[in-house]
Image (cartoon, rainbow, N blue to C red; front, side, top):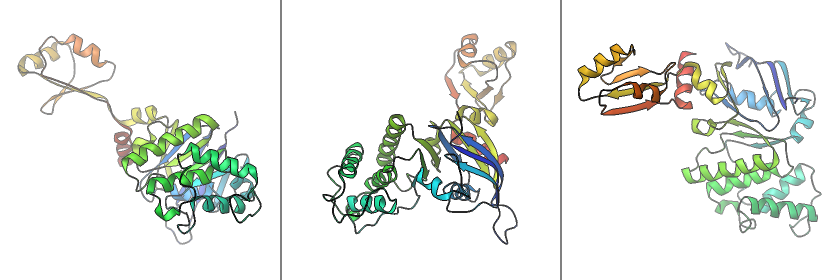
Length: 310
């Protein structure tokens, strides 16, 4: 299957800058994939996503989105994109439906009509369907200024999905949302992806949002420092280990020595899990244990360590 996004040796250099904002990165995204771009502030994430969405021109390299070159066919690229920006871009003085309608008109999807009832029936059907899908069917006539942060995010998703784009770019989509709104928003996005096969390209500072990604790309100072599935990224630098303790610490220390199990006292007994599983190790130890605490690294652990090493 051909990639829906292809980035080959992408470089972006700003005039007067001492180094490249993006420095020769390459990656691909498959259709329907959940791809996450991570990195600290100033790493080049915003520059990369701006080039992919045609709002910034590359210095060199090749970038193709939905089969179109971003530099030569920007309009064709944009027709295949839905974008949710970090900062809301809704008109608070308009109703929810008016925001959707003017977006549809600007995209050339439908001709201008002054009211919802005078818009073509396909538009009405699509708006009602999406509003029901996002639990906004009773709010479309309300002014957006009365919406909560979560409702505004859902409206932005609705607007970005109106032209049924094969690719949805999410730039910090849950920034400023409360935990309940964050969870609900991701439930909606999973439904969108599962039901329509939409490719999702995410940038986020919430590392837990990237745990379900198919592919993670971590960049720092404009270069890729880690690339792969969440499991591969976590296995790259972060250690899995087991913390144990016993009332009779001398007995436990001697038994670990007999079993040739390497450990470090921190003051707990820390055992790196290399070729052993937690089950195998605990089964082999006869000394009564007072503490068994396996450490399974999170994506955040891996991210912090990878960026620190980079």
